[in-house]
Image (cartoon, rainbow, N blue to C red; front, side, top):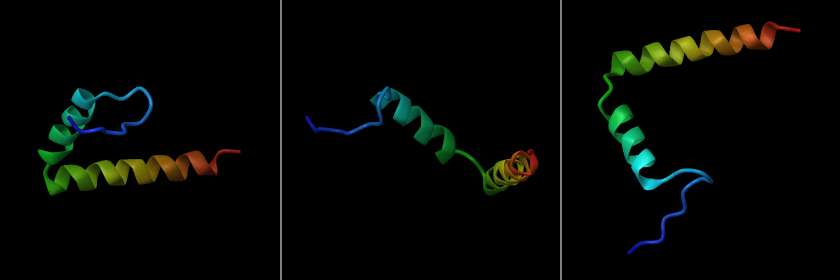
Length: 48
């Protein structure tokens, strides 16, 4: 049995679910998510 070092509170099944989710995404979906994150980050940094 291997010794995996997951972040605190994470379990192997959660990691596997994330890999499955992001591994099945198309390039267009990835780019759309990055665009939304970029716009959100700019809006948040503009706030006083």
